Image (cartoon, rainbow, N blue to C red; front, side, top):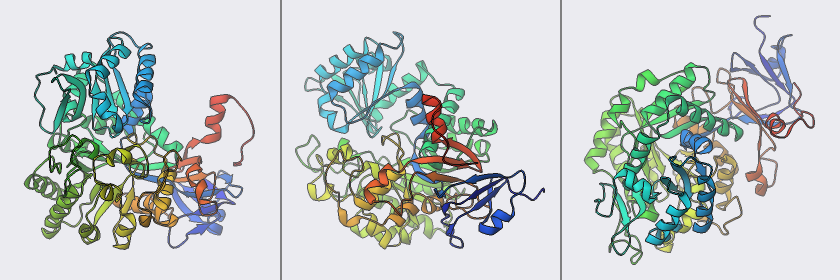
Length: 565
């Protein structure tokens, strides 16, 4: 019976997203890969085959996330303060005070997040004094909802050597009040000195980073995600993922984007210093195949690069359009030099001017004969109408994170700095798809509160906030269909990050990555889509998450299993 399969699923509603066998009721797995479907699958079972009766449950390929920061999310869960960005300043400082009481006097308070809309309120001596009081003398560094900006207390500023006279670093700002006093609000690269001080005084070991990465992946599994792209990877993360995979503990397909530049995290080394170790960090489940370039910042801070100016009278210079982090020639150097080595690129762009610069540069790369490298415009909330067709023409993927643009904290903050007509025209997804572009789905978690793809899918289809906290719709004409939205988190994403050879659909020979859901998304009311939950997640034929088992572990034995093995 050496030819028998290891696992057999029967009596299910299984959407494979495989063109030859799109809908099946049974599926067999052998050696971690999809073996066969239907009668062929059932005929391949033997006495040692594990048989799971799905009892009519809905199964689909594991979801993919092309843009997250899983290790940072794991760090937040294990080691940091983790608050919602919707909290007021009073609520945030109360949470900081409670958290501080549990720490030793010399331990840093790290985490967040604070909402972008609080920026002006934080930029005062009074707010800094309240922050200092809440931390009880401990150094503290809190990130905003975009994770681009920081708020440091007086002790953290002192340790980093920042005072009222410290000049603004290139690509960043140390904000000051009307009297010229540093308030602890640090924009973009303004926070790097404090991040580097934190890394020096309270470092995380490779083991800690591997633990954080594993924890991030555990959380992703609970949302049915079996493959993803980390959107800003350090050398330390590459090494941690290699160590995790070598020890048999990496249960996801991970594509990493090696940081070429950095105005946020304080990463060292950068660029070629990481690329030099690319091959030695590659493993069965880890593919360090991209670089990451931050080409601009974020609109609320005035650091996104736009073709037309921001609003006047909101604290920016007259006719302020923002700017890119590097000139066109430097971007061209990065894309050409990496294309020569077969390395792809994910480029952070939140303004339409940075999007245009990427498209112009990719056009030169393609004209030079480099057609294999993959290029992602990450976020790309704002795209000039004339540039929409160029995504398909140049084979550039739109990497979108719906949680950052459907009605919520960040769009509200953007609406305060851009004219209403422009602020409301975010994420032209319908137009991109109609023009033949590839859209791939990301969460940007933990910038977003969770990596829940079903909330993103709901937002793509309705252009509404899935939580119901924020009313209204955002540019409803750009809504897409449910089937298109599901493809964005499966087959499209697999193509975008180069994993379509192993996952994204359930086809014979591909990894047996599948999820069992609480509901069939095609048969329930649209308003219930955000509430779909994952009952089980399987990676390479191995169960890596079970909601019932998790519930029993949390509250003790109860009930009986619905899925019968």
